[in-house]
Amino acid sequence: MMETYVECMVQKKPSGAMTALKILLIGIAAVTGLLGIMGLIVFLIIAVVAGVGAYFVNLNANLEYEYLYVDKQLTVDKIMARTRRKKVETFDMERMEILAPIKSWHLDDYKNRQLKEVNYSSGVEQQPDIRYCMIYNGEKRVIFEPNAAMVTAIKSVAPRKVFTD
Image: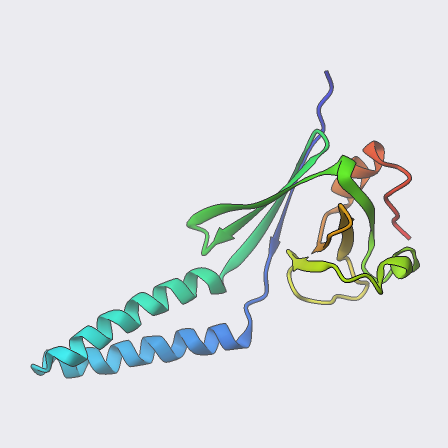
């Protein structure tokens, strides 16, 4: 039996709010830590809480998405700060309605539908835009950035549902 295997990694652009929150929490942890060393235990507790908060904000600020296509299934994993991996979602290509570039005219019929939108892309609109939109099972609009090999592999399984405009 022939299996198709394609892997693709995308670095998500960190948002300004997450970066600002991380810097703020680190600053609070440093200042309250110094005050805690002087003998005020309340400031030491605040420093520990701010430090733990900064750690978790850092995990969610440095995200990468890994797309793995194996034999008619697309799996999306989230890699947080290059230390933790979490399986986000698995898509069966037989339940896919359409896959097209995000600004394709093929998606015009799906623009007015009320679908849940999930974004697994870098969050950056490049020129030309390399993001793709997949309508999955009539209930989700999935935005991601596959490479050309992955689009070709998915097109070999569902040629009437995949467009490359």
